Length: 417
Image (cartoon, rainbow, N blue to C red; front, top):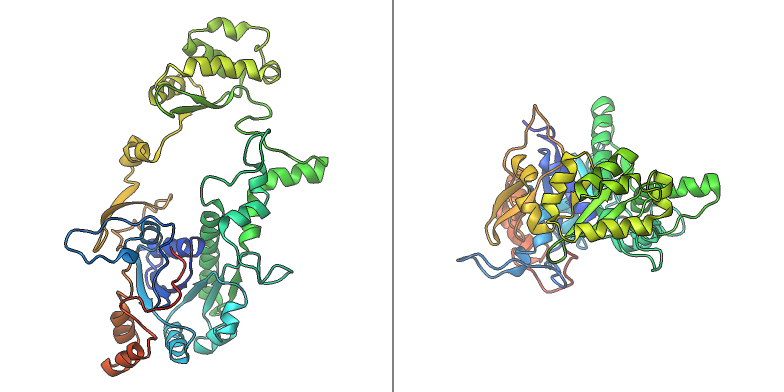
């Protein structure tokens, strides 16, 4: 058994952060039912896998991010703007443990599906909400995607180079962080309910979750009145500290030298032991003062080195260094391969796709193979007939009323993933 075996989750999320929260719970064994409207999945700007040979050409079932963030889930369509759709969802709530949503705080009350109404269906239900800015305050009704919250949290202000403006971080920091925090909060609420038999409404502000990532800058201002700026790859008391060009096209090596001993070891590997005694670089204060010269010397040497080979040589000499790996190199990384980090999952329409696993391993409850992300409306019959006990005529009525769908209906597609 996996840790969350027997826990049923209704996933009513969109975009990235919410689906990640559900994915984490599903990976740990929860039965996660993804509920989406019957109008399909938006495709604009998203990468779509080529169709599998012999499979129908339905690109909305081959969205790469959707299929990554929604693996280990069941999929059902419901139009929650219609009364029968809401009634069906509440019947599902009555046999579930947890509901996750990341809409605006005004969305669920507008559908008569807020926490009070969910409790009418099951009094110990847990609702995890992930509003961008929280359920209170002047921005409560605003919606946002990760890049906007990156900026408002201060993270973008710190990202970039001293002579340039703020930059968007290179990945979904806000969404990944919020997804993990939401999953953690859900586990805490499940633990509380196990002890008290009471559910609760968990509210996660994505903005406040990301502000935690810039704690050092906040403390610096609070204690010293100093506003930290952008420093690129530099460090206030390490030198050399940065990403240095290597041989080949767009190949780089990160080096972070903290101590004088590490600097001397670097000089030995560089074949320049005399630099370890040079008065310009003899200690960290001197190296920071002459960091431009230090960086130029190191970069001149790394340009002739293969990034992974020089990483090995420096690490063996005790110098903190790491090759900046591309996505293709990550798939070849011997450490990740040895730990089975990438697991190939067969999707019925997108084919075999590699997926990264969670960062933790549980010795007593290892995770078995995961199911692929659901195709559109794939589990309508299973959820409605087997879970809820609906008759064929009841399911047919929902389809006739366009409350459920097995192929996207005309209307506004849901944001994907």
